[in-house]
Length: 213
Image 1 (cartoon, rainbow, N blue to C red):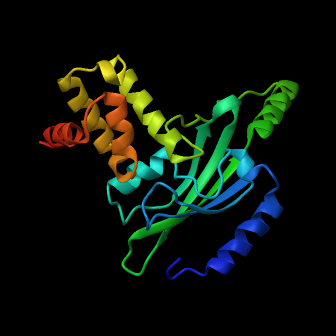
Image 2 (cartoon, rainbow, N blue to C red):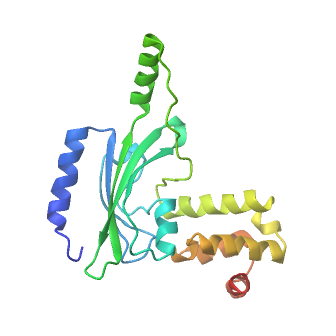
Image 3 (cartoon, rainbow, N blue to C red):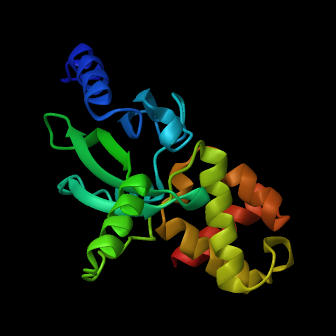
């Protein structure tokens, strides 16, 4: 990566992986070539099921769609994952000399067992303070296809019907939502959306332009 000692990053994330164990996933993303395949290195990918060549999470796509080059690091947030896992995460953005975000290092710790142990201890000592809220807005996916499917599911839930059965007005509304979420920064988004909406690429971009106006 430009202006980044990549050899140092490789050694650092592996040392941290050894330090924190196999419940700690550490991911290096490079955003300079688009958002379809941003993961260039990963340690303990079994935590979320991701691997090299995968894509970023939902919140990163949405943040980058807003061009927030001055965005702060995401220090600590929580995610409910599949099969009941609860992940504690922190994201540090990598910027170039012009302060543009070009990548990130994300640490994802599976704290499910720790929470179970915490609950067992609370029951034993009979002390139950309010538990911290768990953030449900994040989505960790294995590849860009899963990320696109998540957004298409969200659109169908929002409109209340399958994408292929939506009216023109509903498709325009759906495209406005997808555009705001940064989905069109994903290279294969237009092909997948044309298939889901049962429309041509010309019609897709005509509706998209209408949604922006």
